[in-house]
Length: 250
Image (cartoon, rainbow, N blue to C red; front, side, top):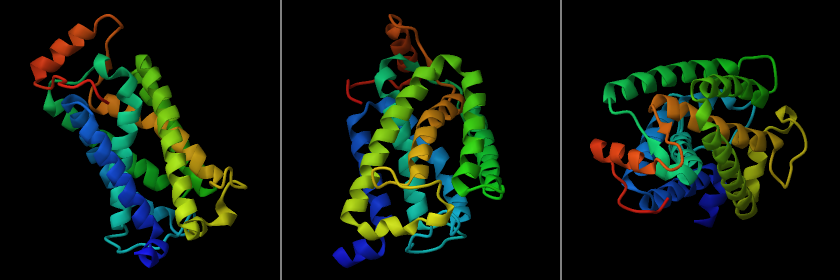
C-alpha cells in the first residue's frame, strides 16, 4: 500500500479528495446535495483538458489513459466541482433558490460546459506560462458571470476563502505524506518559488477557481439569493420544487 501511494500519489490524492466530497454530501441538506451533484457533473468533462497541461505544467504518474484523460483526472474534476460549490454556498444555504425549469438548467449547463471546454482547452496554447494561460480565461469568465449575477459576489468571496483554504491544506498534507508528489510539477514553467511548500501557481488557481466556479454554477443552475429576512420565501420555493431542506447542516 505504501509503495502504491508513493508510485501513484496523484491517484491517492484525488481518491481522498473524492472521499471528502462524499463526507460533505452526507452532512448537507437534500437541496444542497442536488446542487453540489449538479456542479460535480458539470465539471466532470473538464477532465479531458487536463492532458493539455502535461508535461508543460506537470507530469504526474497516472494509472491509465482514456482519450488523454486518466481516472485521477475524472476524480479530481468531480470532487472539485462539488466541494467548491458546497464551501461557497454553505454560509447562504437558507437563502438560495434554483430554477424550476429543468430544460433551462440543461441548456445553460450545456452551453457553459461546451464554451468552457473549448476556451480552457485553447488557452493552453497561448504563448505564456501554463498557469497564466489558464487563469486568463478563468478571470474573464468570472467577470462575465459577476456581471450576470452581481448580487452573488458574497458566494464568490466565500468560495475563494473556503475552497482555497481547504485545497491548500489538503495538498500540503499530501506533500507531507507523499514527498515525491511535489516533483510532478515542471519547475521551469512555474511562476516562481513555492510558498509554504506549495507551488505559487496552485495557490493562484485555487483562489481563482474558488471565486469563479460558484458564479458559473449560479448562472447555469439559475440560482438566486434571497434578501435577509426573506428566507421563508426561499423555503417555500424549495418546497414547491420538492427540494425542501430537512436538516440544518452544510
